[in-house]
Figure 1 (cartoon, rainbow, N blue to C red):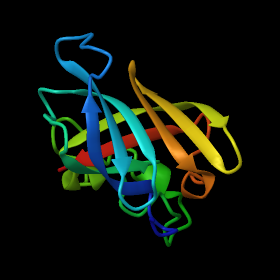
Figure 2 (cartoon, rainbow, N blue to C red):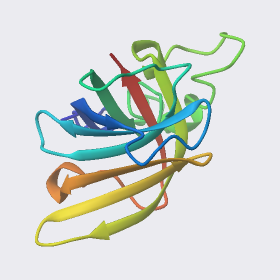
Figure 3 (cartoon, rainbow, N blue to C red):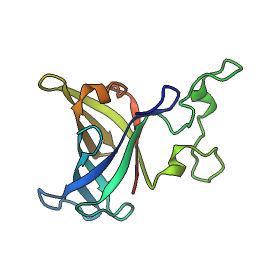
Figure 4 (cartoon, rainbow, N blue to C red):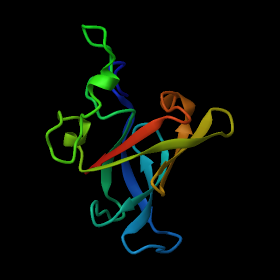
Length: 158
């Protein structure tokens, strides 16, 4: 898992089990189903196939982060919170400071909108990224830092 000073709240390596198993709904968007290698988590994710092409059996790293700041938005030596200091960590003109997005191939920004508790210690977290959806199911121990209502970044790389 991530360290306490990091903005990464979850990370693991997933292997794609199926893509669009219920049929293709949109031209440039697919829904993948994957299983994690380390934490036995199940993932369902809508993603742009032109920007991040995947096929069945592909492995990829996925991280969920509360910000793109590398230091996790921790207070600085002058007492200011890192959140305001790193407000412009990513800018489309490339003039901002480099953040976590530099280490990944595909990044989306969204919000955790639902958290379901299932049987015993199994939970499911749901997030929306402008209509592209994510659900991740597994032990609550691995999702303790994912908070309902918080903004979240999903970061993917092969």
